[in-house]
Image (cartoon, helix red, strand yellow):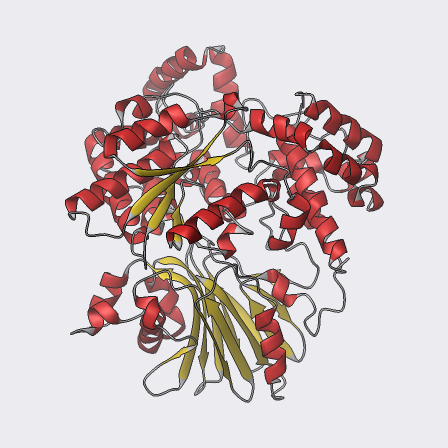
Length: 625
């Protein structure tokens, strides 16, 4: 886990070693074990990283092959090491000791630029092939580890942190991209390949960039396919899911030192913790020490989940830790913390919580944190709409459709005609909608200026998907959108610069299996995350396995807003967003003041707006606006 960066000449002029050093030093890491660089006539590569896997302790980056003709820098890890080692016919002691970076080089030597198709994991890497004068940059299939880049007539410059590129040659200004800001304000993310700054591009998930012969070419090496897994029984789907989930968690436990895991008390984090303990129990606890951390609330009682997390702690006698969400709360020091985020993100408001996580992990000597964030890509969201009924209508499976309609009507308690229109007919007519029952109106917050909302079609941005239609099935298209949105909601900023954050649910084979499984195997009327609940019988505490719903952070956010009102009020007296013509200052102030008294119509969108304001103020403070 760490930073990778590089400069490649496109006009055959020498690369300045000092320019590479400056680029590398601009990166932010709260903790660091190693640093290194490689400098050739027309190429420079740099790396700074934390040793988060056992093999990385002996890894020196940039790493090179035996002949010295190829160099690689890697941010991340490989999960299918065993399969790669077998395919590459690596024998002897090297099977255990070979580092992930060296394994990538061996894969490149064997399969060339197609090597990324064979690698499973969360990674971003760059390979310089000196014989071919080729630079290959790759991001993982899901997009957990990013690569940003600038392309000019003279140079190609890349980095895993966008902030490193600010100030690079060829980026004459820090002009904000309003298209990106419109996406963010409407959805909390942007998936159009954009970044907040004009001139800086993002390498999409599952893509590779080949820089060769003064040309920059992008290739897609992975995407989800329109296939189905056809098991004979529900039990077979559950067994298949459980095997892949176990495999994923075991990959995430490969660490240098202790492993910690989030434990909120919900289904997702509890499943990760329970599976990790089952694996450790089977191995006689030979795996690294394992601990959990839970954010608890004594004041914001409606956000407190400790009664649920305690069920897991008691079942497995865990080494459990707690963070006070009342003390390390949202809005505390958010302006200070915003500088650690490359992009605007709702998590900026929770900077003090993430900082406390980092401190506790450092004290325990742990460099790895597991989290259930983005489990929805595999399990689907809570209370999902039964848009798979549209597939039954399209296939004219009328008897099956009738039975399913009746079951869902009883569960949802809405008129049968409504379900027929919104979940059967509408998805076939418009498979790009994100919400079908019904399409949301009044989604444009009152503080967004009408001119900005109209110019950038904020309502459509909120309601419609970003991805082109790839699947005939509206249900599969909906989940495809969910998978592709995942990178925007990962844990970014301060905490990802302090430890290696791992996402067991974003395991490529697990996502592929979920996408290929029929929807009726994944959800049931009145039962969300059905496949997980069934598969984890006997592993999850029964109370958690059967729980419905989950407490959210809303209560704590309202209380924290009131607690830190003076700091926020100063911000709202003259918002930077107002100077851009994006928000109405008086209306934003009015809505925020209502929220501090415990009422907000669009609380999540208000949080997005405030986090964006903090982020812009931080840039302004750094002289980048």
